[in-house]
Every structure is written in structure tokens, then in C-alpha cells.
Length: 147
Image (cartoon, rainbow, N blue to C red; front, side):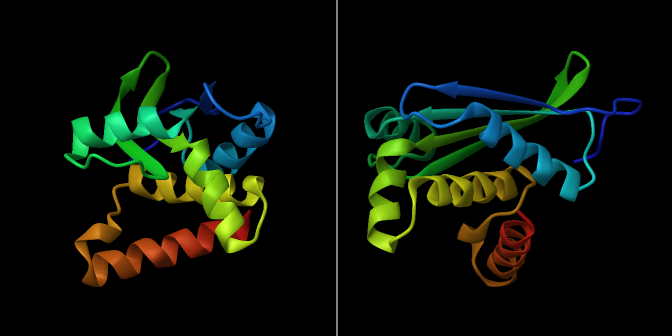
């Protein structure tokens, strides 16, 4: 992924069907992640939804008929004055359950899922195992520790 020449800013879009999460806070996280990667002129979309919707998306695009916490869709194409990196879809229902199980706040879990989805948008895939999984986890940890 490369930056769009001449563009200094990034664009972060947030759609919420579920949850009462502060949009500015979410945008700040994504902008910080883009800055940490040296990316400019990038558009990233985030969609916060429920288990039913993410289950349908997971079934349609991954063939898995179950809810999941986060899905990432890489687009990497021009979008007007920006380069569209992709979309991160997060189930607030699953995030809430995971936060309770782990013992931290919903906000902390959302932050973790945003970073996880962002690393996928950069082209990393932990599901390949081995070296790819190691690289994914290394970058994910580095980004989380930088926020």
C-alpha cells in the first residue's frame, strides 16, 4: 500500500448500526495507525454492527456461517482524492462478549479489533500460519503498544 501523491490528510468513515461508541475516538485511532505506517491520502471505512449482520457477511464472503468479531475487506483502489484501503467491520455484540470474558472495557476490545482489522487491510494474514502469522502478530502488537 502506498500513499496517494500530494495528499496530506487521510479520511476515516464510521458507520454505526450498533453501539454507542465515540466516533471521534475511533477516527483518532485509525488516523494514528495510518500515521504510524506513514500513509497519507488514504480512506478507511469502519462499520459497527451486530452478530446477525456480521454472520451474514462471514457466510457470504468466507463461507463460515457464524458470527465473528471482525472482518476486513481490502479494496486498495482510487476513491476521488483518496486511495481506498478498505473496510473494517466489527460486531459490537461479539466485542462486548469478548471484553467481558477477557476482563477489560468494551473500548479496549474495540481498539484491539480496529488494530487487528487494520493489519489485515495492510495485507497481512495470520490464518496462513507460520511466518505470516508471526509477522501479523508482531505488527499488531507494535501498533497496539503505540496507541
